[in-house]
Length: 313
Image (cartoon, rainbow, N blue to C red; front, side):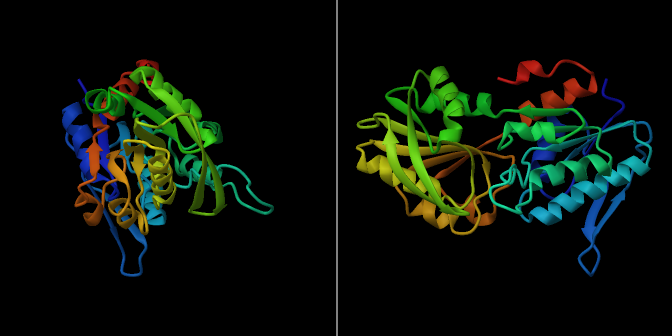
């Protein structure tokens, strides 16, 4: 039934790519993605893809510039191999936080990356929980922005059903937190946060009641964990029983794991859009849920030209 589909992966998240292939019932495509001695990315597609519907699964996660170049070069290789259609499946879209000018002479790098992917030859993009919804408009090709909400909610309903409050770490995440709270029957709180510089934040005031509650801090990603750790400390001071963190993308760079391990956070719920490094994988506070089911269903529907809209919940 899927005779014209071919699924390939770079080196960023081959485990997720294999899970998607297993659920589709197809084999992961044969491609050699390596580097020359000077560090240049080298790609060889080791099977015939002429006339095929190709899906390239590649999160642009750390090392971001390397994984991004792998994606671009793989797209170019497929284009030159005369495939019928190329869909870039980018579970985590790097550079998404640079989605607007925050100062004079600042770049809009999320738009630049969109242009690079389009120019390389992608016909469609499939991503998950983009940091800003307007990034879809940076592309001149179709973009499907899926959400990890069903996977995260399923876990929360089993673990955090009673006496729970969903907390947005900033004003920008209120809509997401309200949506989760509505489906969990949980109340909503907001943290008034003042950012002093890149990767630096100071939790200020809590808007809402968290005293005697089980708190879940909800965000799209956790990078250095500075924000969520400070938020957890603020929750404890406000009388919360316990604080957990839930996010789609576990970037977890720099001192993130050390901060989490030494914090008031009880559990960090993440998905596998980004593979955990060894230290993060050994952190007992981190719970990983797989989004391979949602992504594989989206891939299947795109291949058959079926509607993907029912997945946008």
